[in-house]
Length: 303
Image (cartoon, rainbow, N blue to C red; front, side):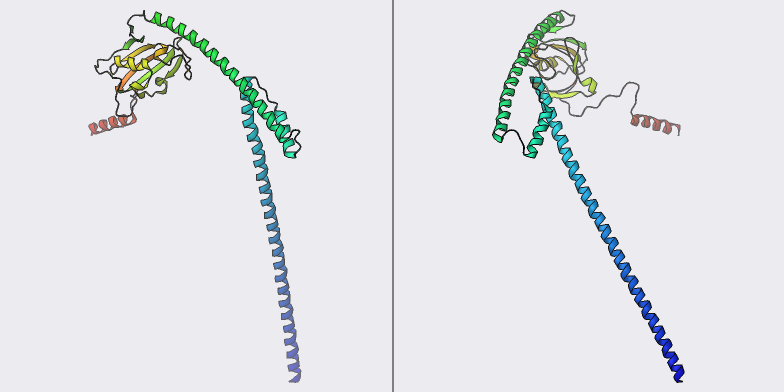
């Protein structure tokens, strides 16, 4: 009995030792695995921090570079506009001034910098005044020539068949006449299609090209139109020759030089229109709705 008990005890102790060793090994493995996972996490965090840092640096670098591009683009436009006044700016000196300024090594003091800029601005103002005076003289000369050419054209046009000349100097002739009898007054609004040209035939505006007529108050346009449209009835198409005083006068107006005699082809579509304009269907073309409607009627008839 004693031998057996001792044997059982030895076996039990051996088994217990094995279990302890096993548990110890498992704990070591767990600790090793945890340590490895922590190292991996630290590496991931380090990489993420490095990536975020690199991303931020890239963002700042791109922003800084873009600021330089934006500044140079704007300044280049300004410099190019100065060429009209005979002023050339050395861009390399501008860049050098910026480098020196950033480095704190400017060759001029702040007072000298402001004095240099003010001196340049004063000289530029004088050049601009001189250029404006030159342009005004050129425009005046051109306007005088336009007036002479316009008067010669008007005299020739007045002799054409079907032309009527009014007391104001406006001239017009009917291209097509409708059978209506309703004419607008100066207080009415009208809807018209028109085409405007200079006396040499060059077109400067056309609602026909836009495929969109215009609506306006008759007392809010040039005098030649205010007067001329009152001679028309709805559906008429007239040609007007409008002397400069009844058009835009002696000053330039957009793309119309001063003292320009203007020729307009005008079609009166409506007086005091109450509905938006709807373009008529082109000849030979039918709207999709109309085609569907006709097809439906044919189907119904067959049934």
